[in-house]
Image (cartoon, rainbow, N blue to C red; front, side, top):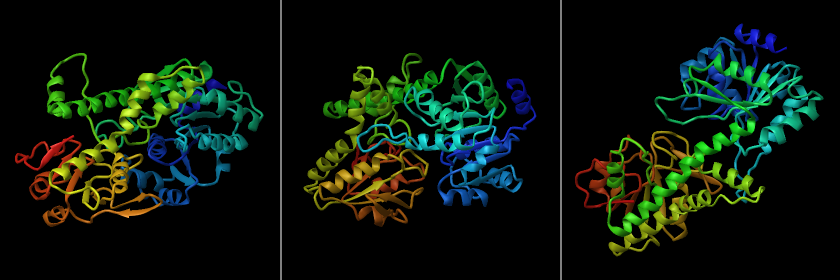
Length: 437
């Protein structure tokens, strides 16, 4: 069966299904279809499905013309009907894996997707989980569901693996197609087949590891590495402020070392779909083995308290102008979790907003990429434009996202005070009203 499937991969005769058409799933589905594989996207949100079928893009990393062309050619279409998975030879699961109210992994989307796949899965199908999760999910959760629901045996009747998504929204160099891919699977045949499928699509290395658990842990290591180092530099920023030292200048100096140092930068907190969440998956799993990830948990505590720290610093800035935070008008520049993207998942800016409002401040925001956002169960609208008069109307302006399209010189010139948590105004010469994190 393996040789037959390899031949089908070579002949582009594999039908591909992608479950979850978000920031990971839609770019993957587009690349599969562009490579010549007929692809079906599955999602429970009818709005997304309808947009895909009209060739309308809603993901920044997808080229609008590419999506329209492959939809019009019949190489990609979408549906909410999971029964179509019966025709799929390769199924990638790209569903959300959030944390619940107790900061524990919520794997309900993975569980539900596996149950749907099991109902219709054909013999010889390859199933790959791409959603970030704790080590053991593929083998301990997904495999039993697929076997019990389908009556088939993993490694004999179907192939199962894990290949962590690597998506960096807004990255101008690395996209889905040219980012190296890691594959871990149950059995050598599954590893070879799944790696061959990705190899037929991507213009990058496909690196195989011995098991899904290794691939799952690898993904957590990638993002926990960033979490820990950002926690370190955030703590350094707080110390440098107390000592009257510019932490940004310190980092620039440290960057001159050609070995043994990688620059990380402080900010108002962590955002995005992975870095703020993944360490919680790891620490939760570690506790099941009686192990406490003390260094990781310390960095999480530092990063989690940064929005509150920003609010405290904002209060001190206002105090110097003899204005209380209670009743002050504050403008946040940016609610996206990183510069020049329209993604505000887990954005620290929203946490900063909540901290300021809790102390009685009236908070607005401006973000050229996000005209409105979901906030506290409702919708909050941003300013439509940013000009001198708008900036001057606030007691304090805080840079929470370093969007490159903002005129920081104009902001610094007209703001009563500017608190720059991202060093976005580094090019501004007159720094009399600018305070850095």
